[in-house]
Length: 618
Image (tube, rainbow, N blue to C red; front, side, top):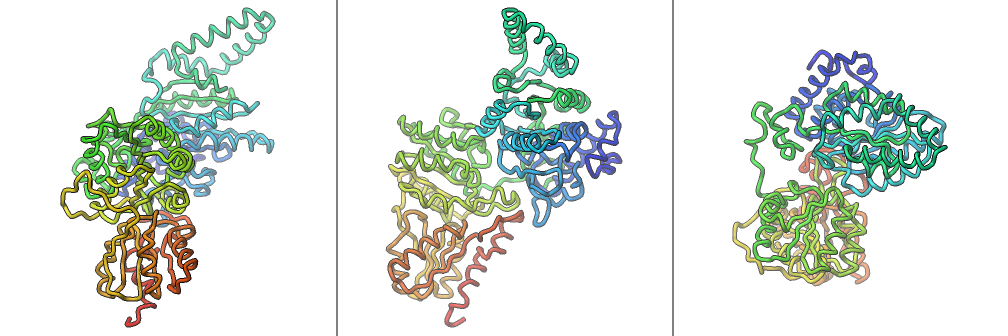
């Protein structure tokens, strides 16, 4: 660790350094980030891009009295280091360790949790209004970036902020993928320096007061000013929303950032600073492949992640293979992702079929609405959204898919426990909130073969269908599944049945892990396959014959499938007792997926243990 970084345990320590020492601090911070994350795994490229920005913000603003909100928490690793978590970074994304994203209350510098994107501006606006209402004069800063400005919530907040009067708030766009403009030239940099200079602002305001007495000339001057700014700066939209736009500026010039931030702080009002950064800055492999180094496993910094093999046995990878196979034979297919092509296994598809691939950015609700238009227009959309992000598109499930009974398929990736990404990303709730929606067919595959068959089945169905699977590896037989092979909707697969009076109804991959112990213990086991519609023929047989039925779902127990089956048994008057195994009514913190499932007794051993008191011969 460098000697400067070793002395930084809070932003107060940072502000004791001279400006001339800050470039060296940034270099040490970047080296520490690479060294630590290569040993722990985690998000890397985004944090490397924000080193200078984090240093400059904490140097200029009096945090934590001044309020700072980071969007997309994985770009905030440098912020975590500077706010007292230098050593704790080694525990990030581990059980009882540092949270993967920004977590409210983790330090006094973190007032708002930010695990999902595009929320920083709205939260900062609320903080700024609260400061004003309480008669406080603290500054409020929102840092949005890493694609988060593509989310509709960000624009809703900008629009709302423009209606506020006499409010101080600075929005910083960390543009690390050149999403607005490629022009970072000397003219733009110099113009930003001029426009943020307090003397320039004072001169402009004074001139406006004089020209107000000459309306015609005043209007002409305003139009000329906007015309000149519009020719060389990409911020017209933000100006129209009521913000004073500045930029674009070099986000890796820490001293230049400090000068501009000081000017903006002195000016006050609604300010929007556009900063260009390079994702992966300072580590050549990450600069060359920022997507690949977005989230990394443990690796050797001298060799990078190139030699680390990515498993092709995951449910996500199988979806990608099915998508390519289907695109080969169906010209109507349209595949949609809200900025998750890599994690969703769609990279190969995007390269092979670019005219059938649509990345709509971090805009899950729009993804659903866009898909409804494609379906109504005669195409066959397949939308892949992580369970945790699907929460943001719930209205799309109801209004844009189910209500209109469109021929469209929704693929829910990361359903259930995801592990180290923590409580904001666990896919706990989708089963409970989707199963109440009419017109939906919802499937949960237990293997890669089953997944392929269910994708075929959902695609062939004339109604909106959902295929839901976890972030995990799956088993497969290796046989070639035909494009027309499907399964009967609403029909379970009985894996073990020796006529006993104990039964398990399992949803998802856990079913296969239970096959051997259930066979040995004489427990009836069904791979239920369908969350909706349920296989009521099987349930009736169990209800009439068995003493106990244990339902197993990798989703919220409250409001889940188990409760639905228990209610059904009660209505039918069955004396069979229903036990419900699922995710308990609490948020699940960081740990490995396997460890969490074991702790929740949702692995094979834990599930059998739940039934041990009911085994007559145990």
